[in-house]
Image 1 (tube, rainbow, N blue to C red):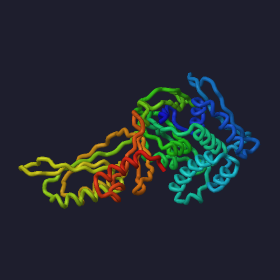
Image 2: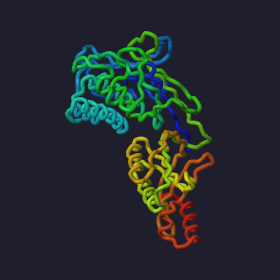
Image 3: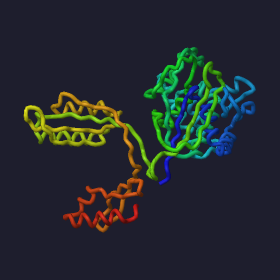
Image 4: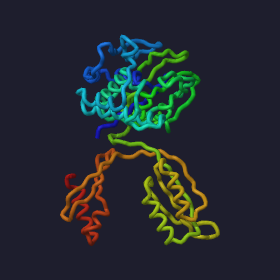
Length: 397
């Protein structure tokens, strides 16, 4: 399999739509025609235009993306969410670009609806509904669609401080909708005031499903810089992108974080523990459960239960452990995993269809038949072996 690309976002100056467009164009200039084609399909007023500028900004080479208008009224005209959906859907953009642009605006609409106590259809966009933001969103969508599948990583985000003026008056930074979109993302105060993450920038990060961890390994391919129009006092107002080819010997490694939990029991019957373990194993968010016997205190034989869970579901799993067992304490910590990319399919055998799991290993792709499927229609070890061989050698459906 082809090695996966990683793009790491370094938000030195912050994250905004125009900065992301400029940075993407800087590392993938070959996709500028795709951007131009998409933006030329938008029904822009005659007084609204855009341009790409390349040069040295704050002492570094990179690009800027500008949207200009002859009048403030044209630049900052507003759109309702439903009007934007219609505009983007029916102006001749490709299906992929439409899907990405609407996904970003859907995130923005849900954030605005949450802070104003409205529904998505009731949202009237002000700043993010202006032509400059529409152009930024469609430009980002066009470039992301042209780039293709990428894993995104991002560092901690500068939170900014102070106030920003909106159509609702002065609001604290980060703006309410931005704060809604940044929920769960790591932020920090680097001492600089002003808006550092715009609502559009936050929605783009959410759309990219970034992993907020700058630790990565691989072969550096290239880098790009996108600059904002604001001047910062002691640093470049830049968004840097680093493109890497994932490390590995041909295998397509995936990465995630899970929680490992463990606890010991020496005062619960084996029958009841078996029931508890089965109930825990079937819970949403539980990836694996194992149990082992061990020597416990006072000469007793005890059990050690270990679980791997998805972090978002851990509180529910933790409560279930206390509810289903007699343990008085649970040890846990977050761990990182590397996983082989895998695919699920089915194979036809002489006895029936069997589920197959394929894994991309460094030495090549391996295929494994699902044991439960084989067990359903075989009666002996010899039959199981025969069906397994058939299933793992036939072509996938």
